[in-house]
Image (cartoon, rainbow, N blue to C red; front, side, top):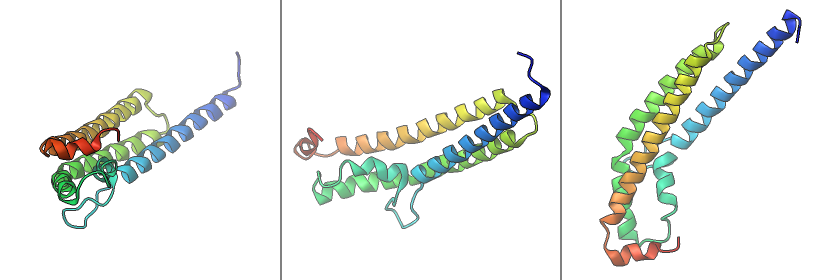
Length: 146
C-alpha cells in the first residue's frame, strides 16, 4: 500500500501516544497496588495488605496478628521493589518520549517491570504462606474452603 508519508507520521505518533499512555497506566496501577503504608509495622495497603485480605475474619485475632507481623517484616524488601519499579517506569517514560522510540528497548523495560512485580508478589506470598504454616493445624483448618 502506498500511503503518503503524512499518514505514517500519524500512525507513528499514535503508536507513541499509545505506548506512553500504557506506560502511564501500568505505572499508576503498579504504584497503587504496591503501595506500602508508613504507619509503623502494620502494612496499610498494596501487595502486602492484599495478601492478608483473604484471611480477614477467618483466623483468631492472635493468629492474624502473627501473620500480619510476618508480612509487615517484609515491608523493607517490598519498598526496594517499589523503588526499582519507579526507576524502571522513569526509564520507560524516557524511551517512550523519544522522537524515534526503540521498541526493543521498551519491550525490555516492560519485561523488567513484569519481573520485578512477579518477584515482589512471590516474596509476599512466600512470607504469608510460611507464617500460616507456622500456625497450629487446628487454626489453619479454619481456612478450608476459603
